[in-house]
Image (cartoon, rainbow, N blue to C red):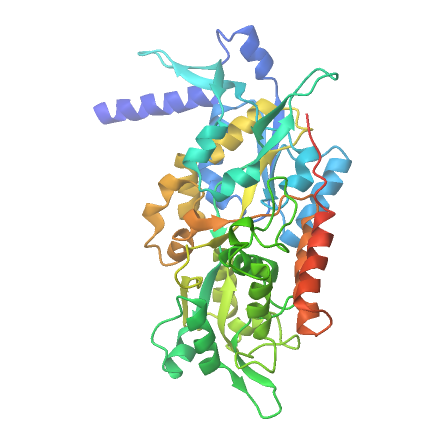
Length: 473
């Protein structure tokens, strides 16, 4: 009987909460709780990893119709730009870490504080649901630097003019977006091919990588690549080749860009002026393109090969450099492939450097519910909600506090182990031009059309033209 009474009481409470009772609601809470819609656009996941969070949000903010829509990567930006042009864009949307400069004019910077109406339960004996004004601080710039891995602050914090006086300027640091996950480049390998070549362990250094590629590559008498040691050495047909070459340059101590975002990798860094005769980026590019040079003993790849991911899934390439998001594709396309994943090789006796690639949530400047939108973004990226998402979606974390629990995960442990030393560099307004410039830089060297020095300088010139970063208010 007591159990039956408890069940009835529980159902009564659920019914009460579902009514969104407004008895005793203040005029401010009524104003903040006017019916509104909150649209969320995603590009890497559907709503499944967010289901529990979306349920909680709809309970807390019953006056808001919260919708979630996922787009395919190849259509996302077109849909996004068209929607903004027609004033039907989302309130909350995803930006790639290299897109933030491009989208600054469309982003509403995170305010220091937000004020929303939130459904709360009052009373001790008689429970009542009501709407109350909740004012809270958002994550601070210092909080972001402390709680997130180092790759994040440099990308998402920007100095902007926050002055409301048209005759004055007041530049302050503001957070433009917040990520849940940070991905890193790692080395996938075909265990069966390594076993057949007598290679017991995958490479840890680039020197070891060179030696293993020599053992794994099969080149016929006419120089045709029958099996590649790695999909490595060209631009157009190597998955994420701009990231790979950027990684090699940074590992070789290139300074990719200055504090203003202008590319600097064609120069010798100040700390190396008395140690090297040419920019370290030259050596990095030479190292990379040697794998596509038939005259080199590490020759294993060329521009006639398929995409490096395709070659790996087909078993015609032993190594593939990729991100955690490539893993589901590999498993879907080659379910019987015996794969391993290890940390990306490093230069021997130098500090570890890895490469960051990730998406972050931000709020549209045209949103009619800015405070609620940024409140939701802070909830989505909080440690509690991020933990649930990462467990479901199988991705490496952006928050430091969530790293240790995922280091032993078979799917994301390797990627997670690299996030603390991961870096990114591009802060311009045209990431597509940057990526094309990097790929062209590689391929003109592979084709013998330009010397390495000229190719690097040309790439820096093209990328430099995209660093006209707008300010926002």
